[in-house]
Amino acid sequence: MDTNEYKVCKEMLYQRNYTIVEENKDIIIALKDNNETLFVFFINTPKLNLNMVKSCVTQMEEEKVSHSIIVYKNTITPPVYKCINSLSKKTIELFSTEELGFNPTKHRLVPKHEKLPKEESRELLSKYKTNFPYLLITDPISRFYNYQKGDVIKITRQNGYVMYRLVK
Image 1 (cartoon, one colour):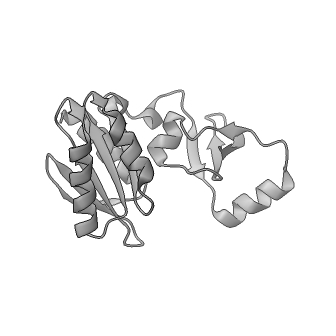
Image 2 (cartoon, rainbow, N blue to C red; image 1 turned 120 degrees about the vertical axis):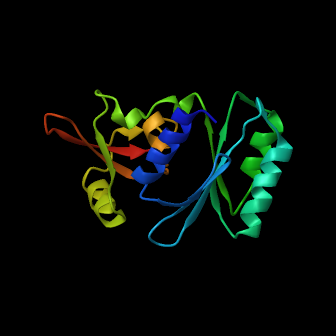
């Protein structure tokens, strides 16, 4: 794996509040404060196929891990999407090496994004029921931080202006 993608992946984990406990060129194992473990698999072949994903899932099951990220080089075969979507108790995020070529949160035009706690989110949503702008779950920042549908994000611009977005 190219060192830049590896470096950006590690930055992403730190920004998601994970601590890296083990790493080599093929896998990173990270841990959150609540003991949630995350595996990051680096697939070095040009095409991510079903057998590779099944291998990752098997490793997740052996270690009782429910969340992982697969970083792949170029393309993904269609059965991979079907397999990942069919997993009910596991979450697998897919990132191409191109997507991890730079850290989008470090771009000078990208303001600070923070996920609000659930209680604060509920208060804000009940106050502004209908006029709440959206942040798509497919947005690069949403993917980078792994925001989920229903999360409320506080965005603070460089001039101090604060706005809120609902992840949809």
